[in-house]
Image (spheres, rainbow, N blue to C red):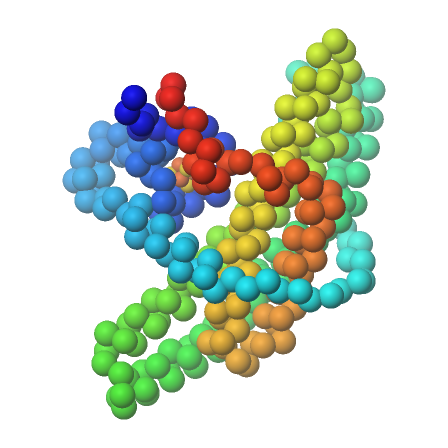
Length: 279
Ligand code: SF4
């Protein structure tokens, strides 16, 4: 039997970064979007290159940089006011539903995964705004070196490498917080189900929470790899980068505690489970 083109549900546990995805050719969502783009702007859609192989090579090369970072930090994260996404409301909320919803919001806001990932998101956001000066200095150095021993192609390549690493950090700093927010929400909802199918519903929510946790874990590992490379490029940012790495390491270890099954969760396609027989 020939392999089905599409992998069922691959888009349910992906990072939505289609431009960098190594599975665009096997994703029905991507394919549908491309067909729509082709209808709207035929020339633009046809101009899109198939980049799966290049993207796969990019992630493999980044993964090679990933060494186990073991930074010990026993301090608990400081609690601060953390907002949460609006939860879906029932059509006609009653008092009991509203009270339960409010309790869940508060529990979610206090959860260490939510606090840590929000903290990381804010720190990266601030870094992206302020690191500009250092990045320009690196660009200047590259240009000076180009005058000496590098050709302009080398400079362009190094500048592109740096840009790609920043893109990785920038993409995942929001995604990690979003996915962990979803995972915690799912975990809390597992405790709030009743009725004849409660155990099935709870299991489905737990599995989905683990899937979100796995996406966050993958984002954390890619971010760690990108920071490790940036550390070598931006020595003036050493302290800040180490703080980011420490925060990511704490986040990763906290996922092992709160979502232990996310580690073994198999994302269709990304973790080798190709179940696309019927898609
Ligand atoms: S699986 Fe890849 S191509 Fe499909 S939606 Fe996710 S990131 Fe985009």
